[in-house]
Amino acid sequence: MNSSFRVTALLLCMGPLVSVLAEPVPDLTATLKAAFTDKRQATLDRLDQDETQKLCTQLRDQVPTSELSQKITRMNLATVKPPADGKYLGDWKAGEVVASTGTGLQSSDDPAKPNGGNCYACHELAPTEMAYGTLGPSLKHYGKLRGQDPAVLAYAWSMVYNSNSYAPCSNMPRFGHRGILTEQQMKDVMAYLFDAASPVNQ
Amino acid sequence: MSVQDRYISLVAACTLLGASLSLPAEQTSEEAIAEYHAMFGDENPAELWQLRGEELWKTPRGSRQVSLEACDLGKGPGVIAGAYAELPRWFEDTGKVQDLESRLVTCMTNLQGLPESEVLAVKFGDGEQKSELEAITAYVAAASRGSRITIPLDHAAEKAAYALGESVFFYRAGPHDFACATCHSESGKRIRLQTLPQLTTSEGAQAAYTRWPAYRVSQGELRTMEWRLQDCLRQQRLPQLTYGSDVAIGLTMYLARNANGGEMAAPSIKR
Image: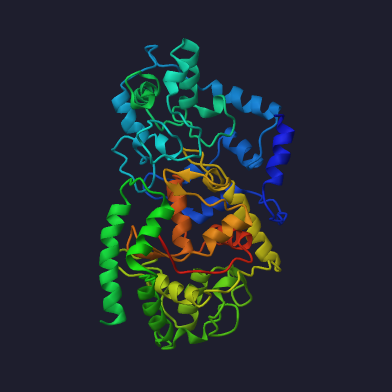
């Protein structure tokens, strides 16, 4: 499906709302900063946008053109650092905890505790866990279906480290690039996806 | 048993149920509420907040010792029937677009002469500390039950509020890159088992907006739209949204206008 068709289809699916055409808000970041206050670790600088956030905000919920897609993916792929020891897979049991934990970086969270990846908020993973969200694709049997070819591992690592390296303006956080998860936590999540003994592959 | 006593025991039962609902039960949010209705019928503890709100509305208070019965919520002094369904709107006396909560703050400070610091001391109740604003909001919103949401967006300042809210809705920020749109611009999606309304469409915005304020079973508290917004933004990993700020009112205007024509059914019950 080409992208212009997708945009048209998306617009047709938007429903009967008549958009009230807006005066552009001149400096939205400054307006936002005036309407928020620091709360513990959630400080006002979180309202500043990087280049990817700016571009994806301008697109709203439309699919980027192929040129813009390439710009965003190139920029984000360049941030991906492979594991220092070259090993992609950690401990699937620790990965399950990361995948199931939804806290981390909210003003209400304890900054001394490790951040969660909250994978289950959006993805189906282990077939035994029924409380999964549907914003992202199902990852059930992830490793069983794909094997552990080095290219497959490198691609999955990039998606966890920085989703925008392959999926421009993804809804998925850029866990490594934005410092949400540590290298070890991402390796553990990789093991949860790929390890033959992981519940994801049963 | 008095109305209060009946609801106090209901709140106690709800708190227990709330504790079980907050576990990752294998149940969608709709199923959890259906379970609640099976246990308690149409009883809604929000009525406790409405009763307290009514008393606060009618009691002379503040340095001027007057009640809120002369408060103008947009349909004339003291008119509450259908008023919530037409908010936010532009008010000539303040020269601002206001939602219900910020308008109540205006009436409590200007009309009654209560100090603003006192009015805003407990914006969101938490067990022992009760919020007057939540109670009065529940009382006023209940008087719009069955009214159609009517947001004509005639005034330039109302259009600007909508435009600001729409821009904020799509603004990606924070360590997780989340915007409101991340979770609320597709239909039929879930976070875990919680169904997400698609707030960019009339249908989705109506389903969500017509049911706030709501009694939250999991919290044992009545919550308003101001609470809902600042708690979404907390989950987006953003700082604290200021109560009654132009961004809070802009987002409310965006949702209310998108929900135009919907039939108010608040206070409702939510998980």
